[in-house]
Amino acid sequence: MNHIPVLKDEVIEYLDPKPNQNFVDCTFGFGGHTEAILEKIKPNGRVLGIEWDQDKIKYQKSNIKNKGKIILVNDSYVNLKDIVNRENFGPINGILLDVGISSFEVESSGRGFSFQKDEPLDMRFDQEQNLTAREIVNEWNEEELARIFKEYGQERFAKNIARNIADVRSRQSIETTFQLVEIIRKSFPRSYKFGKAHFATRAFQALRIAVNNELDNLKNVLPQALEVLEENGRIAVIAFHSLEDAIVKKFFKEQAKDSKLKILTKKPITPSFEETKLNPKARSAKLRVAQIINN
Image 1 (cartoon, one colour):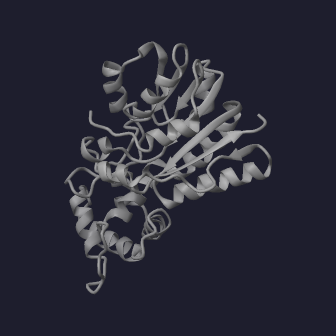
Image 2: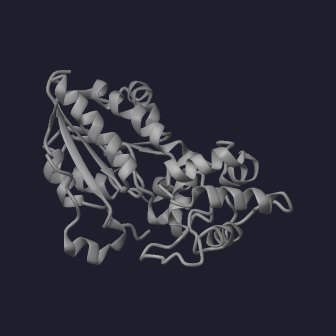
């Protein structure tokens, strides 16, 4: 599986893993960051990898290297404290959260994350949960749709999109990404000049966040990370849009004010020009890192 871990060198620099330490990779994915960490924590360090997506877990269980050094759990990082306790994992010297969507979900999952492929409106990371993008689009009321497009997608034409969705679904159910893309396209004024980003980007982002409860999950995991980290342990978070980054920034500032954290990145670390050239999807990534002062 061709996956390039974002800001890998910077993550290693700031997490500063040392021999025999233990780390938690809350968004294991295809293990790119974990592999880099494992190189630094030899010979006896271990990584607890948490991954919500069942398809990725199946792939990893048959392809993973360093099996003895990685504990792989199929769960959401929102349950971090319970997972750590259940696996009796510790002491924990560092935690990584890479809260972006991977290229696997967009390109290979077939779950409607991409507006460039005609797929069922699903957008679930966890295939066992009930809520899908299809349910939101077809069953949530117009006001709630407008709210999530505006709040989660920062979409200027949120009300137009919600109104047009309500109009179309009154005649037929909306089942696929291309149906939704066409509705979004018609929601923009004819005079509107589109920028570099695809016009459906913000609405699709909003739906994905709503389906997976991503912002609340991030808010809920950060305090748990502080509880399970050892003193002087570090937490690194890679965010990919301003709403996520604002949550991390606010949390770090509040904890630093209470003398629980020391912020190690005064400004977020962003990818180099060379990295974005190799991996254009990394361009919006922002890394923030903090260190426990008193646990």
